[in-house]
Length: 168
Ligand code: THU
Image 1 (cartoon, protein in one colour):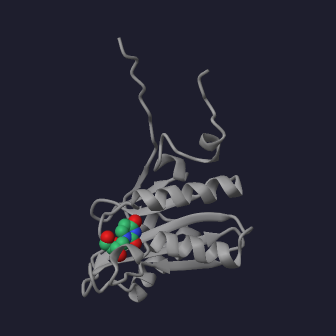
Image 2 (spheres, helix red, strand yellow):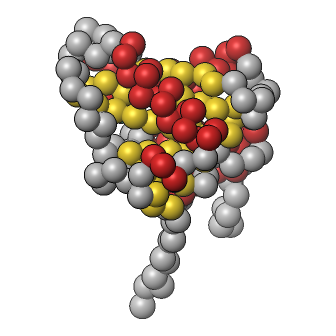
């Protein structure tokens, strides 16, 4: 009989923005603000991401699309790659992500794509401390995850390349 492996992830569901800490609120508002400069003429789906670094600075990103569709990049990766290019060793405390349709200001319930989860994992491993994630939940709710690990169980990372768990 096959063994069943159950994986648990933890999400704190906040009732509204009012429950955010001051630092979280700052990043949350910056993520929303960052949707303004998203370049998304093809999807009209605007995404903003804000990284709050340990020293209190904020680094933002937004989605940047391209006529050659796969050449575009998501907001989360734009933020993470940009931050890592200029400030590689300052740990990231949290990433806040906001999305909305163009010409509307209703923020949508959306979670980061698989590719962005993979990139978030790489930087979490690199800095050796968890990156908290803030997402719009249902209605006014905000989802808070205490680590990227909760977004990507059964991860592929540098240990995978080393052949951890290999069987003779
Ligand atoms: N997008 C992001 O920026 N982040 C995600 O995690 C999911 C999708 C962008 C990519 C594309 O520009 C638009 O949203 C529609 O997929």
